[in-house]
Amino acid sequence: MRLIRVMCSGRVDLEFVLRAFSNGIDGVFIGGCRLNECNYITHGNFDALNMVLLCKKIMEHIGLNPERLSIEFMSAGDGILLTEVIDDFSKKVEALGPLGIGEERDADELKAKLEEVTKLVPYIKISKREKLDSRLEKIEERDGFFTSEEIDELFRDVVSYYIDPEKCQACMICLRKCPADAITGAKKQIHVIDQEKCIKCGTCFEACPPRFGAVQKDYRRACSTSYS
Ligand code: SF4
Ligand code: SF4
Image (cartoon, rainbow, N blue to C red; front, top):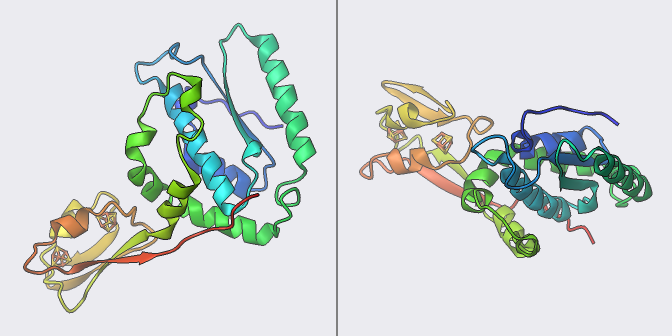
């Protein structure tokens, strides 16, 4: 078991969890303060909860048992509860078996899928921004908050942006507005989008003057293998 301390459970990014599984970790447990008792005005534990609900659905989608991820809320005085919860989770993960083997999935294939999803984290966060910002006060709101159909749709139409060299007028508008520094170019030089850096925010698509219409969208299907 490896403990990683963060200042708030809301700091545990979706990318961190996917990276842990990608590195072969069999289970991830997130312990947060009780809901509505956050030390910060941000109420980060609600963010952590939403992230976990989303991540579980993504895990299902790529063929990973979602039981390998868990979140619980407790106070600093709940030492006994913490040990019980950790103990139960450890036993559960042990029963599930090593990552991939328990799912009867090829380890390399699973790792490749996890890495593919990890690259899409900015896109996932932008696409699901509204739900990720929600505050689920009631336990019954959690079930079905993210659906399998929704996740399937999310990965069915993954958008990529590219610049048509025939149309680009090298006006630098998109380059100046890109929040990820993903566009290279200069005056009188055709601009190019670095797909590794692009977070698929669509700003360049909106910013490119309609008379040029140089930024194009392309859709492709990404990562699927449902867990059952
Ligand atoms: S805004 Fe459009 S025309 Fe201008 S540099 Fe970007 S892609 Fe080219
Ligand atoms: S989609 Fe967003 S991140 Fe990607 S190149 Fe365009 S502005 Fe930059």
